Length: 168
Image: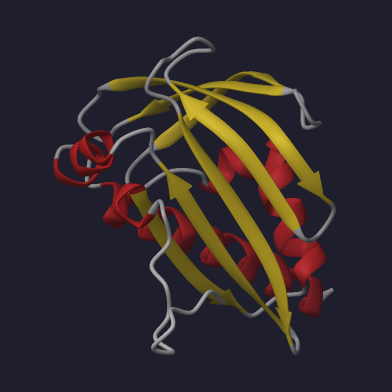
């Protein structure tokens, strides 16, 4: 961790443009990573409460793309596009996320998977191009609550997989 001369933690240069959300999931890291990297899983849990996802194209590899539509509970469709920029199996995934491939307001996200005994700690760090875009995502699109709900959906989905495997 960076520290200032007074010994206090240094603030990140991107702190005013970031959203950071973390959760602990009672499941092995490999399973949590799989749930986030295979479209057969993603379409079952991705998005905030009440949203569903339709995938048009999915290729999980560096420079691969995920082209999808998130369907809001009010019937609104949100065009989404992700390109994967870094993949470290079971450890880290980074991506660029926007409405389309050439979206000038696309933001960067990184998800890390840390083992915590039999559990997995995940942290999603999102960095927007500007503070104003971050504030708009928080105020207009409820990005913090939506991110927390999305990770809660992941927790519920993975927990169900673990439960079913234990019963088999």
